[in-house]
Picture 1 (cartoon, rainbow, N blue to C red):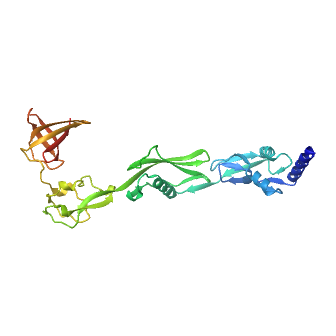
Picture 2 (picture 1 turned 90 degrees about the horizontal axis):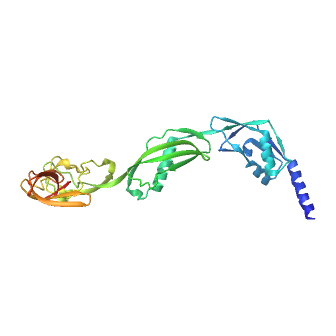
Picture 3 (picture 1 turned 180 degrees about the horizontal axis):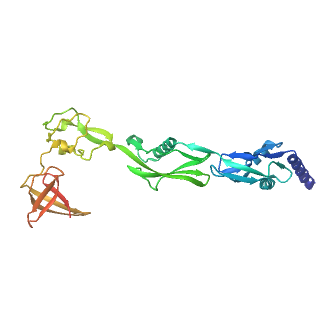
Length: 313
């Protein structure tokens, strides 16, 4: 009885296949990296489940953009038999000419995709970022259905300048690879004046205020420690909103010629100190020559505080 039921089911299935057909096209254009039966044929006379199954049947890799691939009808027929068995008519030309559709990928879209990915990966607060600078990316033509991957270096910290890899993949194949140099500018705190001041004005603590600007706009000689300019004279007019620069001030010396100073010599974690006599006046961070009290040897270091000279040995 069981054998009769199985035989009957097989006969019904074969009868259903016999009523259907696969009509192959002479030419076909595919949109993905894999050619499926649904790309190259019309499937008729079958139920929805079987039709969907056959449409998804893979019959080979798609050609590249601008290339042509020929697929024999006999090969397609063997693939159909492997899937559903014999009995289904496969009609059409002896071979099918298959081409791959290409699409233009805008460089502006790639830059936007890259920016969004960077913003999602930045490990710090986005409110601290003033700008993300991405150079112009050329347009490119790629196989339709390609995917874009953004690849960062392991343990990327997203500080200042770094390089990102853009890969366009067609299935498992990389069809285009580009390295993009990216710069992130973050907001930083600098010092300015609360109101416009005139040349010759003596700077007080009340004159100085903090400002938040992009790190890309900070001059190399920006004032980093306002206490060092307190009591100095402005060499020029300074407007509110300008970043204070060391060259704008006549800073009084923190070490004067003849002062007894402490010389601190450093190398890594090692630190030695001795005493000497300053041979010239020096403002903060300026060079000062010092004669060692014991050896009479003259050395040069930087004035880092009242009576303090630091150097490396």
